[in-house]
Every structure is written in C-alpha cells, then in structure tokens.
Length: 353
Image (cartoon, rainbow, N blue to C red):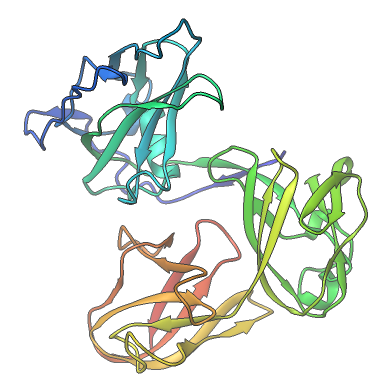
C-alpha cells in the first residue's frame, strides 16, 4: 500500500542526544514468571537529536520467562504513550531474542508515531510482553519508565483509499476515482486503517483500494465483512463518517459523527445537554464554529457523548490525540475554531477575530 509522507517542521532537529544522570524512578522486575529486565532498569532521561539517528541509544536485556515448557517466544517491547495502563499500547520493537539494541532514530520514530510530542520531555512507561501462542497466557514484565525528548521527523504512514459514487457530490472530484479518493491511514503500520470521509447523500456506494488505482486490488463486502474484489459497500445515511478497516481480519466499521466543543472555555461548559455544535465545510473539508471563548479548557467531542470519540492535545502543538489532554485557551475573545480531520495528523486552530 502506498505510503503517505508526513512532513512537519523540525524545530528541534538540532537537539543534542544525551543520556542524563537524573533519575526519574527505576522500576525493577522481581516476578520470576515474567521477562525480568536485567539492563537499563529505567529511570534515565534521553534527549534525542536527528544527526545521531543511526547511533545506538540503548540495549535492553531480559531474563527468559518460565512457561513451564520449552517454547519459541516472541517478545514485544511495548510503550504506553498516553497513560492508559497499556490499553492503547504501541509496539516499540518485536524480537525473538532476549535482548535488543535500539538506535536513536528507531526509538524517535516510534515515539512520534505513538503520539509522544516532540521538543518536550515526556515520561514514557514501557514493558516487555512475552508471547508463545493464543492458547498460552502472555508473560508481562513489570513496568519500567524512561523520559524522552524526541525530535520532529518525516514519518511514512501506509494508506488505503475510499473511491465511490459519492465523490463528486461530496467534494472529492470525480466519482469512482481512487486518484482523488480520501485516504485511510495505518498509524501503527499494522494493516489497521482509520480516517474520515464525508458522504453527501445516503445510499452512496464505495469500495477500498490498496493503491490510487484499480489494478492493485480492492475490497468490498457487506455487514462489516470485506472480501477481495467484493461487491460495492453502501452508506445508508448521509453524513461525516469515521471508517476503520482491519485488513488482518477483513472487517470494517463506520461511525456517523457530528462534531462539537465541550469545556469551561466554551459557552456550554463541561456538562451541557448539547455540545457547542460545529458546522462541516465541504469545500475546505473541515469543521468550524465562530464563538466567544473564555480563558479555560475544552475538548472536541463527537455526537455529544464521551462514549464515541473525543480529541485533545497532549503536546500543546496543534495536533490532536484521541483521549488527549484538555486544550487551553489563554485569553478570552471571539474565535473561529477549525477542526481538521481530513489529513494526518489530525489538527485544529484557534483564530482570533
């Protein structure tokens, strides 16, 4: 599948890579049945710089866990980028050995892809998960933690595309044209894709393609299941949809979304009957609202509920993370707020009127 090159401004590209002696609290594993880390017990701080991307950052070693029988073990070094107790864990590296050497560039790329902000120090929890097969319970190390200051990089994300009969009426140029179709992105490079697509009319048909053409494979189907070359998919109701595709299991989901703002900075506060509603601009492919804001915090939320999707900004850098930190408004005033879910990373802006 075609790669999307995501360019960002490398403000911190000249940061010097250092290993600081300041400890942020080592955590030593004492569970004999789990992979026990024997090097770099945690507690170190690292500032990364782009010019040292090919240099070794650290070597992690661990003791093989006891499964009670001889087993071929796959180890996953996992990171918890958003403090979700590894509910949204990202894989830093996968290996069949009991040690791994990581370069500055490898660590930096995985941190940025997982949503760790660049240019600021972030404490990142890590763990080792030992996996044999789906019938055997994984062995998981105790959590250890490092502090990282990543630099901004060019990241390549895999994409698939959503051509269909809806395109011309929905602002995506020509119908059934993969070249003009909106993309879905795999942020973890794991054949799981997500993205947002606007359908101006109900009953519209569409498919997924591997490339921006019909020659390299497509998927259709029905009822949440996909088949290579399958029948056209149908959106029953017009609207702005979040689409998730899992090509590992050949499944997909669609969620109709309407977007609004919630929080003390908005006129509706944190417990409204209805969020401050935003309007979709088909030409610009963004959601907007012009409103008075007070000094305070807010988030973006879909469908007036915390049960679907909410976005915040962990790094205070204008990019959005699902479930991220509250967004701050420093000064009261009249603002035009723009929410852009059409490109990655998802982003927003506050423009003073």
